[in-house]
Image (cartoon, rainbow, N blue to C red; front, side, top):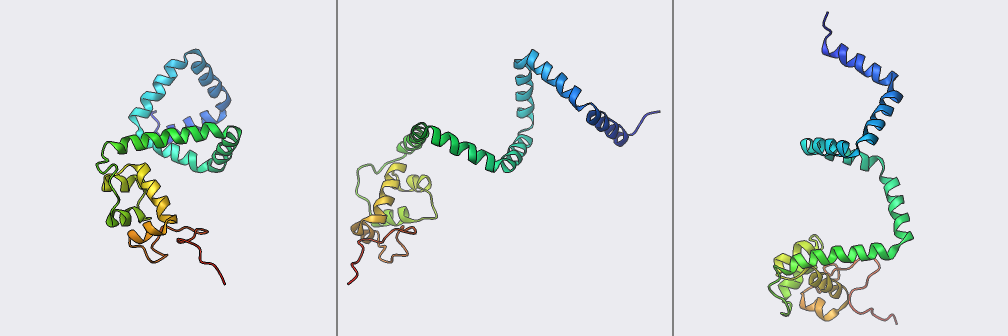
Length: 178
């Protein structure tokens, strides 16, 4: 007598639960015998199910966020120069890509360009192509916008709330208290 799908699934789940150790041992042995075959099988499944892969990665990331952060901190403190070099390489790649569209190299910055660069709702990567500048140029000008009163005034940011200030940063020169 054929069983319906729900009964069959429940029966299979019960079998897997009873024999979990044996099933896991067989799976480990199969993978150890031909790891390249298993890798091919996994790659094929990942290619066929990209949305499920993203879902699993997202769930794993949320479940292991604290563990991942702690691991990253340990790795960074064990070899900080390696991570600084990695950041420099990544920033160089981003800047090299933006250099292709940078048409205003060496030209002085105009007031409207400075106003756009000062917008904190846009990242440097977003602003650079709008201005025809490299990402590094935008980052450098943003640093100057936080410190140099002459550039702040050129940008038309005479209100301290408009300048690119952060907590603990000052707007232009610090006035002396009498």
